[in-house]
Length: 115
Image (cartoon, rainbow, N blue to C red; front, side, top):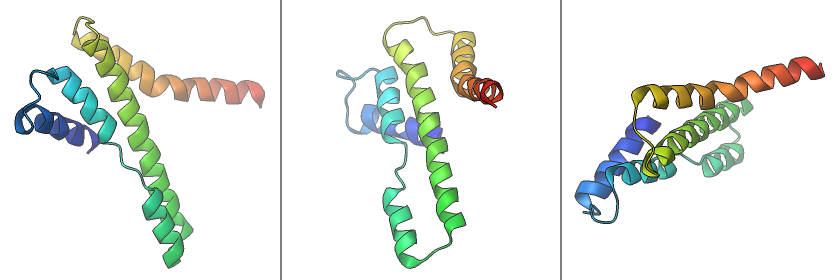
């Protein structure tokens, strides 16, 4: 859903608000990736106030972390394109995989070494 929100935000910036002279399509997508990540702080605070289960609050916090990570990956992929890097699907996929799974792999290696 974050990717859909990113795309819809870029459509809004480009076609509804008519920022075509100020924003390129790529810059609009980058803007969309920044504002599409949700912030669950108010929701988690309300759940605690209402006495909802700890499991539900943990699930919402985890979903927010996943959204934040996805937004960061999309932003970093798009910033290279906005800065003028040549757009190749293979380069985008390699960078996406590196950013998405590189931290996990580094965490496993670090955890293994330290344990």
